[in-house]
Image (cartoon, rainbow, N blue to C red; front, side, top):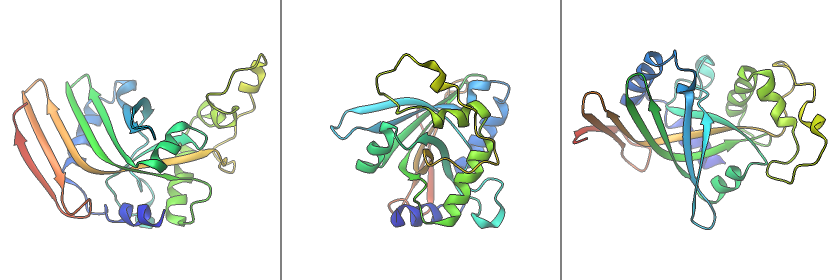
Length: 214
């Protein structure tokens, strides 16, 4: 986890694609599903795993100087989810993100890290607590459900517990997932434009950008 924490801190200098992505989010804000992205990871047996997750903002958003402005995308997950084990085995992942109103797609490649109840870094825990507070009551309630993926019993009441409030202690099952981006492929279908952003130095260097054929 120490290496992952160091990598996240290296992302403090704003990347050139961040403003482009934020502009797309703003232009598509009327679409509720514009914050849904497809996150692909690698299973331990080498096969791909893909699922829809909700974008929760950049790490450090609204936290002032305690975390600083980063280019790390955040999502949330249950610590019992398969993706947690997949990330531990292979942190590489890619997000595919389509914005229907502006007809543009972002593919963001990078390494994932998981901030859980045992993470020692207090700054990352602050980001985890901030994500917990922004969840809806039904969203927080899901982390009280039984083990994901296990056979379902006949008692549906276990899926309807009293949800924790935003001010309740963060449940141990709640994890913040951080994507430290190293490559971005942005295509604007309406304009036949495509732009690539690459981060040098194994994820710790400066960003370079290039216009390429769509």
